[in-house]
Length: 424
Image 1: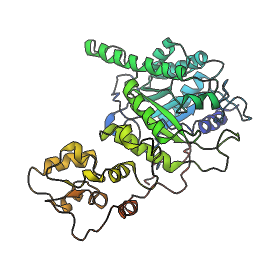
Image 2 (image 1 turned 180 degrees about the vertical axis):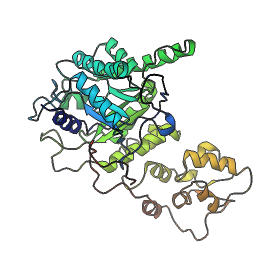
Image 3 (image 1 turned 60 degrees about the horizontal axis):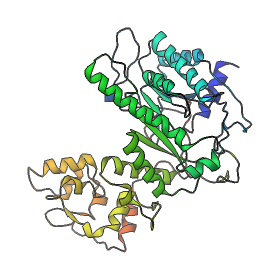
Image 4 (image 1 turned 45 degrees about the vertical axis):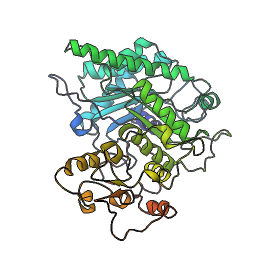
């Protein structure tokens, strides 16, 4: 099979993996090596699709052949599809060739399980070693660790890659047993623990020895499929919170399930991917990471799923109207972060600017506050905007109208050959 035929098959097979952003690492210039990754340009990510996926990495599978038979996966062993596999040399040469032509600045490498987890990881390690040691490639590499592989192989992979990830795929053990019987929760969580410990050990070594080998300097991430099972948003969000706390993940990615196979246990092929639900989960994820919220505050047993009409922060505020409005001249940073329309940057700007004088709503807009949402929950000098009219009954609809436009009505999964560099 020709190399370009393999590329067409294996890049298309990789498009359903969302966890491929590359921010959070600085790999500066090294004599005798080519390429670099700097945090000043958000890793090597120069262009993003409308839903935030990085499109400057060569995103490809080592092989789409797989010994597993996960019912939701287009690459499962029982599916009748064209199979292909790169040799480690082919993959390294393809990557360096694309880099030299300025098509890409990094590599996102995953794979189906070829023969066994250990065998697959050995091939991935061999490809990355050729890139790093023979071609002296110093650019960004994100690699997927294969659950079930030996700990020493996870260690070797982490010394070659900038970021590692292990996909949980399904939010619950019941979902795994039903749709991916060859996988287990324990096998998935074990390498996540190894990566966490390896990263901590590497940081401790670097504090003592400047030239100690660096293990996965950009940390680790994971991906959850949304919509393939009946798991609620509450269950997914509590799992996310636990993963951040226990394994120190940099990111949890959510991938709306795209029906690609016919199975009675899965949504039918004519079901649309729950893209708006995915969007709400990403918004809630940011509330956990940057706004000081906890999962238990956002959803409860009575409300296990997000209202898709409103962003999670607005939904929380509507359920806690007794805490509003807050006075912009007196509220502390933590309180300001809970006001819809106020983000971490604008909250810090408010705290700084109010030391110099009284703030008005016109000033808040200049500070980055989304006033069309914040005006219902803030006062400036004890007053709300003149002429503003609302009640608890009408406020949800007014906030829904203030919701910013979402990405295109019919977003598509990204392909390596999609047009890049166009602002959306």
